[in-house]
Length: 92
Image (cartoon, rainbow, N blue to C red; front, side, top):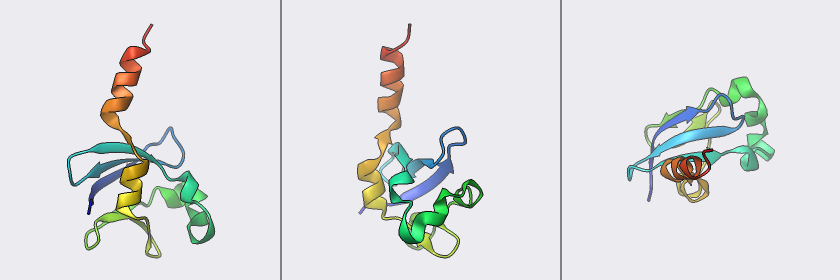
C-alpha cells in the first residue's frame, strides 16, 4: 500500500496538491472531483489550505478527520516528471 509523506497546496491551482509518496514519486493531484458530500467543505480555499499528513495512516487529512485514500490519490495523480517533459516538449 502506498503512503503519503508530504502534501503541499499549489496556490495558483485551486483544489490541487503536490504529493510526495512513499515510493519516491511526486505527483500533482486534483482533489476537486472528491469535493462533494462530507468533503464539500474542501471547496473553501482557507479550509483546503489546512491540509496535513496523518502520521498514523499516512494520507492527506483536514480538520474533522476528513481524509482521502492514498492509493486512489496515487492512481489519479500526474507525475511531476511527466509534467516537466510536457513543458519541455511544448516550449517555443
